[in-house]
Image 1 (cartoon, one colour):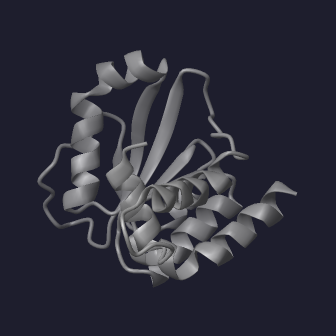
Image 2 (cartoon, rainbow, N blue to C red):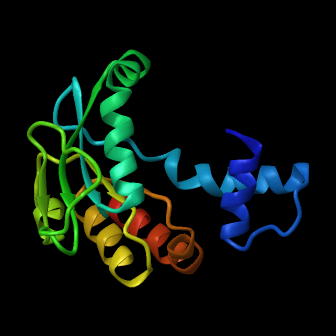
Image 3 (cartoon, rainbow, N blue to C red):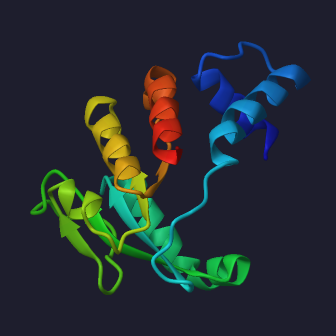
Length: 169
């Protein structure tokens, strides 16, 4: 893991205030504690299917990067990564990215949360209230979750970890 990323994650969690080797160790322990016991649930051996919450700059950037680098990710992981749905507030708003073939814009969180063919929920909608609902709903429905939401993690990590522990037992 990149040391700066480890520091940023730990700082967001309020666990460190200075960039030192011990803070990096703390960050690594924090980040990998939950991930080490979890496995990625996948519907197909060859494809990881994503549902993205947020179709703005970050969500659109994810769609574009996954499309532009599809061959690279396939070579790197041995799997194709398919974006199946992007959940947005306003489906009529023009997007500055092209949806991949087979991908749809939806406005209800449940369209992703209750879709058993989606393996991973990617939360890039921002805020903490709806984002927490999405993360909890995705985990409860057996999906893996990716988020870049530092505010959510800083505020609700203990509750999310408790949920993960409950779901794993």
